[in-house]
Length: 102
Image (cartoon, rainbow, N blue to C red; front, side, top):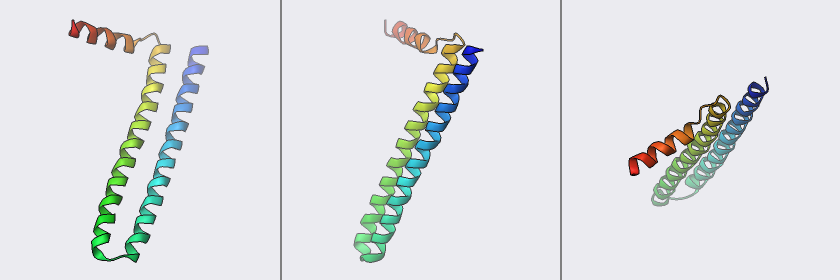
């Protein structure tokens, strides 16, 4: 029962941190888009194009960062679940890489 409880706690914590991270990054993205929209409404067409490109780059960066964070959290939770069930996937992958290099 102890292993199942630890696994459940790990999944819940991973889920909560993942959702919190996604919400925070979407909040940052919303603020960036709102700021860009405000700036776009106040300036001429040439600067509008530059700010639009900057906003698109910022949105792409935030999406990539959020995907990396969520992927890391999911990977950590899955690794915890596998380790608790006696599957040492990290060690197996490391040994396969070492065998391929030698």
